[in-house]
Structures are given as structure tokens and as C-alpha cells.
Amino acid sequence: GAVVSQHPSWVICKSGTSVKIECRSLDFQATTMFWYRQFPKQSLMLMATSNEGSKATYEQGVEKDKFLINHASLTLSTLTVTSAHPEDSSFYICSATVGVGYEQYFGPGTRLTVT
Amino acid sequence: GNSVTQMEGPVTLSEEAFLTINCTYTATGYPSLFWYVQYPGEGLQLLLKATKADDKGSNKGFEATYRKETTSFHLEKGSVQVSDSAVYFCAQGGGGGSEKLVFGKGTKLTVNP
Image (tube, rainbow over all chains, first blue to last red; front, side, top):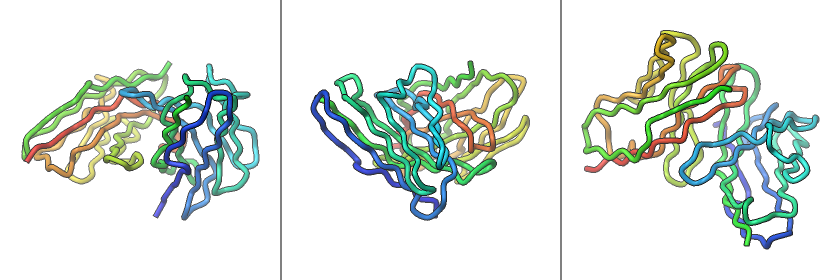
């Protein structure tokens, strides 16, 4: 149980375009989902926290107008990278939790390459 | 701010060798501490956790003890297997893991037969 999926697993897009990444909790309802970014050989950095039905909370230094997060249901959150640039190329990972006191379950990640 | 520092890899061991991966943290307050493992091609999985000082987390032969006096949470295993080859991340967070996590950089472990 407690499976989180991400789609797509990898995506290549042209500079200036937007790309949407989906994160789904397959067998549980997630009150909170997190979006992390991982650079090569570096740790995961939290980008934002989203709760179902409310606006996401972004970490300092993360542009909320560039990284749009929508948590429309208890099983789906989306991250849209708008007007992507090569420096946005990275590995994006989501996680989901049932709530306070419960662990986060991680998706397998999405590799984004912007050309 | 809160941070996690773990030993850099990669670490290469022979099967049945003893494993230690060091992890220290800085935090305001008393966070919960975690070790996550990422097998090739898979998402991070919680390996073990400890929520207060002197707690020992254990799972699959791995252990780590929450040491407040040294702000450490070192991961150990007495006899590693080839199947333990993965990247290991130390992390801290609140809410028993349901709040945002601060990760170390990860340590890649390769176990050779």
C-alpha cells in the first residue's frame, strides 16, 4: 500500500513552453503533498507544500508564478513549470502524507530537460 | 536554519562488511530524524526513524540512534548485502514525518559480492 505515482517519468520541452507534472496517491487520500527538486549529487530541496483545496505554501526563493501548484483533490497534485528555461532542468519529486504523525510517501520522480 | 550533513560517498563495500554512514544535524528544537533509501529507478522509501532523543530506529538490519548530545543519527548495519546497494538519505522534520523534510545530500552505497 501507500503508493505515489508521478507522470510523466521524464519529459523534454523547449525553452519558453510550459510543462505539467502530475502526482497521484493511488491507494490513500493525501491531505498534504510536497514538491521537491533534486539537482545531481545534491539533496532534495523542498519547493512547496500543498494542502487539498488551499493555496500552496512556497519555500523562500521559489517563484510561485513560475512553479504553479494545484492540489485539486485528495489524490492529485500538479506542478506546472511555466515558461521553462534550461536552468529549470532537474529531477522533480513529490511526496504525500495522510496527515500529522504519518510518514511521507514519495513518488519515483520526473526528469525534466529543457532545451 | 535547520540542516543535515551526511558523509559523502560513494561508499563501496564487500558483502558482509560493516556499514556506517554518518549524519549530523542542526535544528532549533527537537526534530524527528529519518533515514530514507532510494533503490535504482524507485522513489524514496522510509527506512527507519526516531522521534526523540535516545530513540533507536531499526529496520531490515539497519539501526540508527538519535543522539541529542552529539546531534547525530548515524546509520549502521552489521553485515551488508548486495541488495542494500542504493542511495541513503538522512533527513529531519516535524510531525512524525508529515511536515516538511530537510535532507542531507545522500550517500551512494555499492555492495560487491
